[in-house]
Image (cartoon, rainbow, N blue to C red; front, side, top):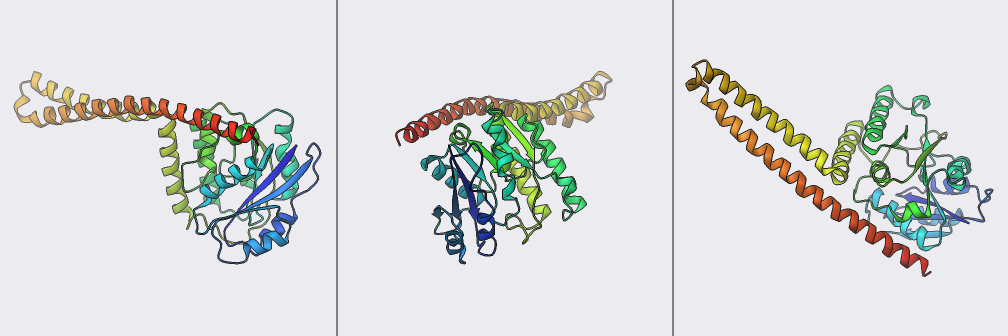
Length: 314
């Protein structure tokens, strides 16, 4: 059984070597451990440092494409290289390599398809109270949207078996962490978590400019991805609220009309008609979106079968 540890990188010459050297090369139940580095258009000596530290494979982008694209490039490359298990970790050495055996254990025991490393955010001393609160709230939202029980949705320290990796399709350009959890939950892919510990930070995050920027982009990603998988729920909810507002305005007009004051409240009737029409249109859009979502599921299944056929031939 082959395990490939993939490491997306962007200008990580100072830490990528240490990250690679901390990865255990002998793990019980694993015949071979290899390291794959995905260089997202680095302008420093990241590639050289990675190769010097013992990276077995390298995927390099000419220009930056973002973490999500680098992650998927690593998944595709790992599958082509014959990986039975794939572990994703960060190049800034945030996650301790010593926890990789614990991370893949539920997969080896056939208890899960995907395992997420729980950083136990509440115990991380260098996280501010605000950041801890937002992480907790965000993970709760992801659990509700995805139907999973992951306490640390933002953790990038994850393990995938071959079957789960072949079903991943990331469309976001921001990050893969939230999207893949929703995708796994909606696709009935078994997801588990194990506690892990992190190292002290070596640099500020390059994924976002601050907490507000991270929150804004994460919320946009969650809304977009959940709408992709549950469009009827989203649009029917919005449409129902709009129609409810229209119904309330219509009831207001009828009340005044019944009491002989209808002439002075004709605007309520006009706005009621507008809201009811718009709400109905939103419901129709939801039905169309649900049909498109059904086609998307068929497309994803087709892509999975094509990928499986291509990999099985190798």
